[in-house]
Structures are given as C-alpha cells and as structure tokens.
Image 1 (cartoon, rainbow, N blue to C red):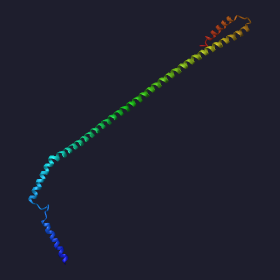
Image 2 (image 1 turned 180 degrees about the vertical axis):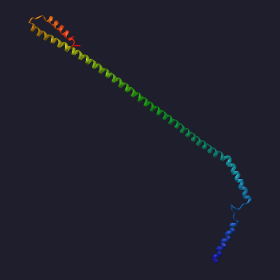
Image 3 (image 1 turned 30 degrees about the vertical axis):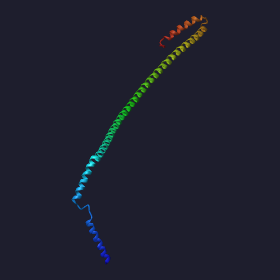
Image 4 (image 1 turned 135 degrees about the vertical axis):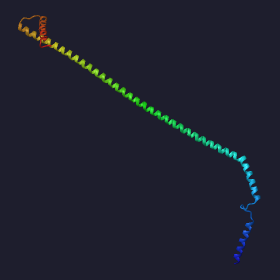
Length: 188
C-alpha cells in the first residue's frame, strides 16, 4: 500500500508543478503586449525589406507566364494561319495540276485528230495515186492490145489480100477502122 501512496504523492507533486509553470494558454497582459510589439516590428521589417522583392519576383514571374501564354497563343495563331495558307496552296496546286492534265488531254486529242486526219489524207492521196497508176496502166495495156490487134489484123489482111501495102499505110487504115469501131454504139 505504501507503493500506492507513493504513486499518489508523485502525481500530486506533478500537478502542483504544472500549475506554477508558464503556459502558452495562460494570458497575461505583459506577454500579450510584447507579443504584439514584436509582431508589428516584424511586420514592418518584412513589409519594408522582404515583401517588395517577393512581390516583385511574383509580379515578374506572372509577367513571364503571361508573356509565355501570349507567345504560345500567337504561335498557335501563326501555325493555324500557315496551315490554312498551306491548305489553300495545296488546293490551288491540285487545281492547277487538274487543269494541266485536262489541257494535256485536250492537246493529245487534238494531236490524235490531226494525225488521224493526216493519215486519212495520205491514204486518200495513195488511193488516188494508185487509181491514176491503174488508169495509166490500163490505158497502156489497151494501147498495147490495140497495137497487137492492129498488127494481127494487118497480118491477116495482108494474107487475105495478097497484096502488100506499106506498113505505115496499113497501120493508118487499121487504126481508122478501129477508131471508127471504138466510137460506135458499143463503146462509150
């Protein structure tokens, strides 16, 4: 039991010591006055020497951030403007390419038509030339056949007549007869 009494005695001594010790929560006018004086002096010193650089740094930082935001906005607007310009140029280039392709097609069609017309004209010339050659060859062949017919007719006539005329007279006579027969109703 003595242990218990000793323990109670120690607790009581500790409570008495706590009552006499200064506490933050114990308000006294002297302590409060000096606390306010020190606070006001500290506030004055801070507002005079510490706050202006801190506020200046904060304002400068705010300006830098605002400038960065403005620069970023300007860069974004420039990029959008450049993008739109590039799109317009690309559209114009595509349109120009389509126009050039269309002109190329038209030129190719025109050239094809010209070449086709030239080929047709050359073909027609060749046909006309061939017809003229055929007509000349026909006339030569007819002339050759006519001469041979005259020669055969003269030979047959001289045998029949037994009298021989000179070749030039015979030829003229036969040609006259053939010309008269050629101009008759059976010829044209």
